[in-house]
Amino acid sequence: MSNTKVLVVMGSDSDFPVMESCFKLLNKFEIPFEAKICSAHRSPVQAAQLSSTAMEKGFGVIIAAAGLAAHLPGVLAAYTILPVIGVPCKGGALQGVDALYAIVQMPTGIPVATVAIDGAANAAILAAQILALGDKILSGRLISYKAELEASVEQRNERLAEKLASVGE
Ligand code: RP5
Image (cartoon, rainbow, N blue to C red; front, side, top):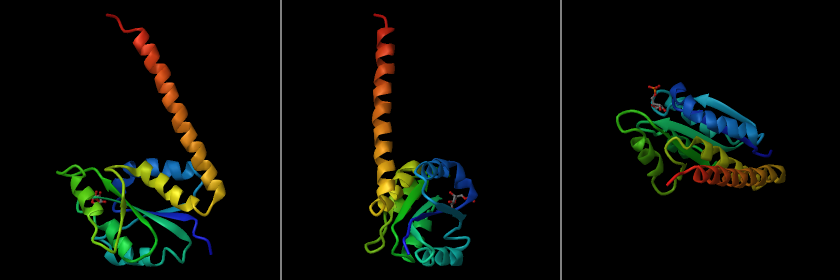
């Protein structure tokens, strides 16, 4: 069975606004995904179950988003050999620095690939890049996406040139 789907797990429904860019990009790349809310602290048994059964359900990558004392990505990584990408969510008194440190500072043996605070879009792209290793069609979509990025820089240069032309002395 090929593992072509992405499992997206959020610690709370309050993480949804941050994760919207991730869902949009997964849709853009036409990657099938399932999304669940599950907390390392409030529903730890379900977190273990979700992760330990993910591989047999056809998932190839797990993306886990959490804020505050963000143990969710690490706990999910403990129960699977699938790659886990962690998204630290901004919020609370420490504005996401707590979540970043909790997610990135994993002990040896249980890695979590950590993106920036609120870096949900990059989590989707990284998941796509992992799955594209075994999928030529998806590789092609990623190559097109890079071309779009390059074109957007050219557009920015055109806008810059217009602004500079209207700057006075
Ligand atoms: C974390 O606590 C969640 O991932 C969320 O970022 C944060 C706050 O959760 P709620 O109290 O809004 O449910 O576990």
